[in-house]
Amino acid sequence: MRLLLTVTICLLMAVPSLIAQKLIDFNLAISLPELIIESNLGTDVDHAVDAYSVLYTTTDLEGRLDTASGLIMIPSSESGSFPRAIYQHGTVSSRDDVPSQLRGGWELGLALASFGYITIAPDYQGLGTSRGIHPYVHADSEAQAAIDMLFALDEFLTTLDDNSVTASDQLFITGYSQGGHAAMAAHRNIERDYADQITVTASAPMSGPYSISGDMIEFTLVEAEFPFLGYIAWTTLSYQRAYKDEFPSALSDFFIDKYIAPIESFAREEIDLGQLNAELRNLMLEENDLISPRLMLKEDVLDIIINRLDHPISRAFEDNDVIDWSPQAPVRMMYCGADEQVWFQNALTAEDVLMQTGDEDVKAVLIDENGTHGSCVVPAFLETVEFFNSLRDMTSPTVDERLNEAAIRIYPNPTTSVLHFSSPADLSIKSIQLYSIDGRLIKTVQPDEQLLKSVDVSDVAPGLYNLQLISADRNLHKRIFIE
Image (cartoon, rainbow, N blue to C red):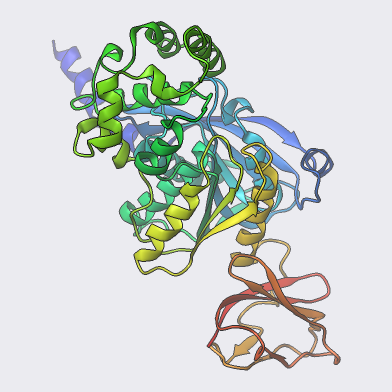
């Protein structure tokens, strides 16, 4: 009895340290040189990348400690300080189709790291090592997986052999498709719940379903064709877990009987999302020429979703909208006009609602009017990188320590017409570039003299801009305001 009591006391004393422990384990998954990354991405990059599969602690939807997994990607070709980035992946097919397994769209996270960002890519709850059904398009759990992994990153960086790579204070957030929703949720929750510990520099959600209860319901449950039947099934399983006291607990309360068996097989992880989609479509085509999720739902459930906004089912959808908040950092929502999976109206609705909060640094950015969900990925990502780079503090090894705010004085800021600056006598500025806040090049100035002393911006519209000063091989970025 005394031995049992002693063991119990020791375990209880150990609990706080276990809970505080964020990083559990990691291993090097892959190292890729710049040449390989460039050949796959189709554009020049700045760094080789080391990618590490990691395990870390998080809190699940039931409030229990859980072991989550993800991928940390480190620019490896040079030492120095780099900004941090969160990459939220899109919809995956199964538990193992995730970044920690070098799957599930991890390549975009890899590309971001190759441009000089220390990048984390969480697998999300219910995927990878995390237990239970994945809470699909559940905003808070998507956000928490990223936030807890961000804390784990701090500890991970201290374990690197030579501590040659460190993280700056800057944090950028992006993600595609479901990851766009998850990126918006992470930005919102960090500013809402962790503002005293983490500051978001900017976010760029891409092609995300930000308006679950509005635009996505309208897009997926109308009379028109929508062949991705598995999405509504996975969302239902997700919200049954997240809202177990309010959401219908039985699939038979939600779906017509003939569709229940494949959904149950998917919930037991016997089939993946692609197989679920195929089985549901085949069942639907037995009686219908049209493929639409509305034909899977019981009539009373369809009526509730469309017409009864006060019902617990509708409230669950609304609870996962990520549009009604006030960002404190710039937001750019990349989208394409012919997206067949996530209606582009999501980006426009989010822009409209977020702008109503009084924040003017929010914008929906049309990448390609004819772009589909698949064709939009690469151009949206490259636009995101340009946007992030325009806001980036160049404290990495690519920036000369002489070329900083202490060495160069830029004044007045704000200005109405001319920017003046002074620099050390031994430092020659080759050119100055002025970028809009969304990354568009507005103006380039080439100096006629060895030292450039001023820049005329009287022909530039009032607003917030990023000024880039370029010396022989170094850059400095500084935000300026033109009145």
